[in-house]
Length: 199
Image 1 (cartoon, rainbow, N blue to C red):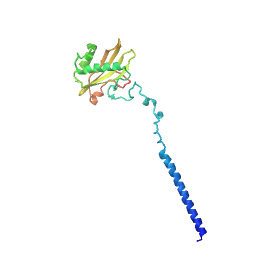
Image 2: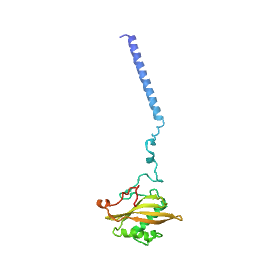
Image 3: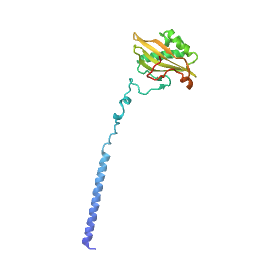
Image 4: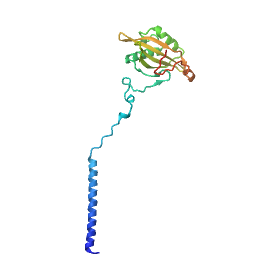
């Protein structure tokens, strides 16, 4: 092999090595720049595809999903005033205590509560549920309720009215106590969905 030929091969090898080093140094420089760059911000969740009704609660600051009762429907204050809801809870707490002289029942006409106390006697209620609050066309506020005993339940509806900035019990409608069993539950006369009321 001649010297000239060997020199040309050596030059080609050197050029190849230099090109390789140059390529590696460019890659290393780009990689180093990527490491030094600020991390990309996390992707923001696009809420545009979620329907508005699921994003925004429709009732004050509450969630659009609520616990439900098999008979009276949605629990909670619903569309009713917060003070009316608290008053309704106090009335039901007083009735649940079984004490007709309870301070929670102060101001409520005993004649209105009599049917409720009478209906609860065979039931021996252990708890109650309250829900479906709404304002009626005549300005009253109503709530569906249900007392639960061991084997039976009793459902009804409270009507409250705001008089002189204080809530008063206006009327109570009470169903007969029913067995909690499947057979007893099917004997309720009405479909107590949150859109339909008692009487």
